[in-house]
Image (cartoon, rainbow, N blue to C red; front, side):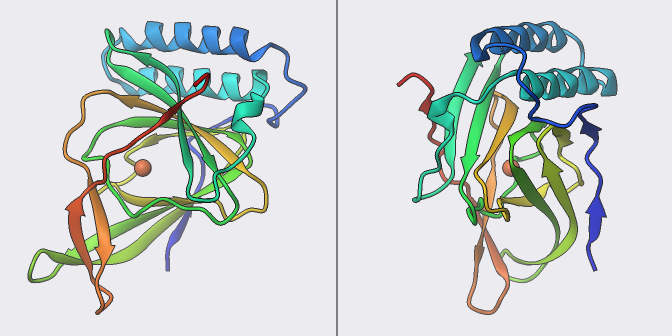
Length: 210
Ligand SMILES: [Fe+2]
């Protein structure tokens, strides 16, 4: 029986509201807040600052038309900003109804995530090692994240998770990721129901104004 998790951070007002700023102004404000918070050493306080900045952006910014449609071939990864000097990247991911990620880890890399539109389910798993570098995966918990919710990953020690859009409308999520990339892994289903750990596929992304 898996646990149902509460979002770590939640908007004080339901999102989306009547967005109060242009997308460009809201994005510039978000980038400035990320750059300020990024100067701080990692701490729960910094996690809270970054999560609040992402939530405020989700509430304040209208969704650009370019992010309003899903790709039937799989969820979209769209770069909104990349700061090579500070070492972070901000991505929007666009999830069509029924679309989901692979089962994967981020190699322990911390990530800040927020929901801009729609809803996203994040399932967390724990593994039991088997022979031949295979594992059994057991569902630990489910996050049901809605517009205006934010969280910091990893949520559990093993960080094995999968995101899916179980709703009818397109979901757009924000992901703030460090640029350094420790080994990441995917989990490939074997014929006997166990999983094999494999290197993660190379991640490609679009740019918003391409
Ligand atoms: Fe992930």
